[in-house]
Length: 334
Ligand code: BTN
Image (cartoon, rainbow, N blue to C red; front, side):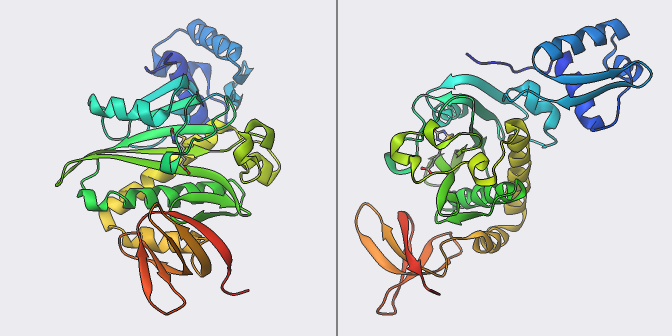
């Protein structure tokens, strides 16, 4: 069931209160902005309180938002978003098979650049290379964004690295030392905290659309995750010792993603590559790269101007790797 799409008067009240931050917004200002009576504003505030918003009210000063419920619908996200396009249309679901599957279908039906599908739970979350993404309900972030970039298909893979940079920076801002393991695993202390799955619809000349799906372990405990990934994964809560308000994290990530997508569109891949290098857990390490066809061992030296990993073998030759899983064998420096 889709939860909510249009901006309601309650969402508008929340937007104004969120804009006010720690300051009070007067009841008169809210009535004027919304064209409602003071009593109608009061009724909407009461309704919001029933949904879990804590709104302080002082007769001489007005209203102030002090707590938002930990849910991911337009009601929580819209007031926090100042993006131009990303999340302007938000499809929020309680449960879906996979947000990537839903977003792909919406894009085939004409969804515009920036439309986002978010879900509290995925029953068949998809990981890279046919794996599943453990998606317990109500604790993490699972979303997919439809992009319609002006790029030839050969450059579409750059968007995964753009997303990885935005995701790593948002995690760092949230207080953990996040690093990117090539191509797009986000990890903290060697354990996976987030992943990106990019899917493409294109013909030989043109990208029709790209769906970038991102899963971030936010407030889950190890026991919430599927047994096979428990030992290898962490969450923001586990890594920094305190939970996060998911809507705040999601809004920060959407904003950062738009900043990097804009930069990529304006300046190309070079600034993304520089930022990616600075956030990389892979470069400078001895790695074992496993792909469907083969295994390659060497030192991960750099990424090239298409995002491919450059691995120097023991015999000195450099191999270019476009896809695969990386295992770090040991640090080159140790
Ligand atoms: C990986 O590291 O293997 C990629 C994981 C991507 C998971 C996200 S969760 C939201 C979106 N919907 C999916 O089914 N997968 C991606």
